[in-house]
Length: 202
Image (cartoon, rainbow, N blue to C red; front, side, top):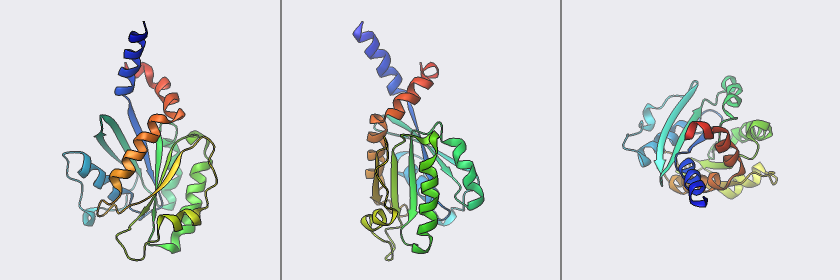
């Protein structure tokens, strides 16, 4: 009997898709990150950075990493588009929040937008990966400096970390994705979403 239930659970887990939101204000590098992830983990070549335009609405990317299916939702970050973010919160397993670490004049705007995301009840318990992007630029601040600026208090039932990346060059992306998968697999939120979606997985 145990083996039957274990097999059923394993089947459900193996087939589970993780939905990951990519958020951040405009020009932080969200779409550049998505395209780089696609080029690293799939046979599809991502768009070159010079052909990427600001996202109006939604970009979707699907990859498979370590037998785990990831669906990334890259949402536009212009002020007029941020109101649509919350329409995707309920089904998200985790959030990647990208900040342009080389643009201090917009740190306060990024911090304000992030705080609003974290207050939303539909994202309760979702692991949070904060990326200090554009580390290829000499003016980029470090992860420690960004963490100190954001001054995030301990988030109830939410695992989070900071990672230095360059979406343009690919630095730090593999480490970020591995952390994200591990965090989502251990998250209580994943268990809740799996039970909710169970009838559609089998």
